[in-house]
Amino acid sequence: MINPVNHQLKSNALITLAGTVGAGKSSLTNVLSEALSFKPAFEKVDGNPYLEDYYHDFKKWSFHLQMYFLAERFKQQKNMHEENTGYVQDRSIYEDVGIFAKLQYDQGNMSDRDFNTYHSLFEAMVMNPYFPKPDVLIFIDGKFESIIDRIHKRGREMEINTPESYWFDLYQRYQHWIHSFTECPILHLDIDYYDCQNQKSVEQIVKALETMMANPEIRYLNLSEHKV
Image (tube, rainbow, N blue to C red; front, top):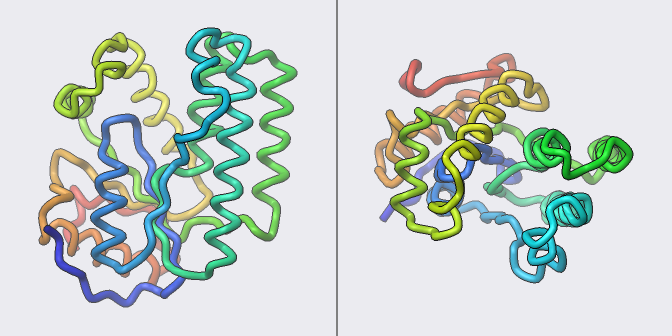
């Protein structure tokens, strides 16, 4: 149980979490939103009209699936902007484009035409005044072995039965993507150094967020290297 943390973050701050499957985004979203008295924002998974079809035919339905995710993510961004309150967001729209849509394209599940259309729509969305960039993106990272261990421990059959080569490809894609990400400051959180269920760790994360938001010139901070 994490206690509320006194903080100086602005009341409508948007903190977005990014990281590969198994890194702990949902857990930290819950913990951090409670600690800050912010609202959590999770990815919509129920009611997806394409998900079942996608698993039966990747090539036929990947474009439709990614377009659905993009539309839902944009609606979420718009709603958060209109509410004008503090949010902790589980996964960013940037990952939808830079990681998952690109993965579908590289695997041959999306044609050049479909991928270009998808990317063009994304660019139009992010230039929209309703689209707020995060104040800080928390990149949850760790050794690949630690990520795999977490995937096995949470015991989701579909994930356990997925070849490890897929998770390694996804892991490497995140490593490359985060090094090219420039939309907002990045707080690098290493799961091998910090326990997100530990009060002291959460307080250190909050202090790091305060430091970064008070000093816009800080574009990157790694908590495993810089204790705050």
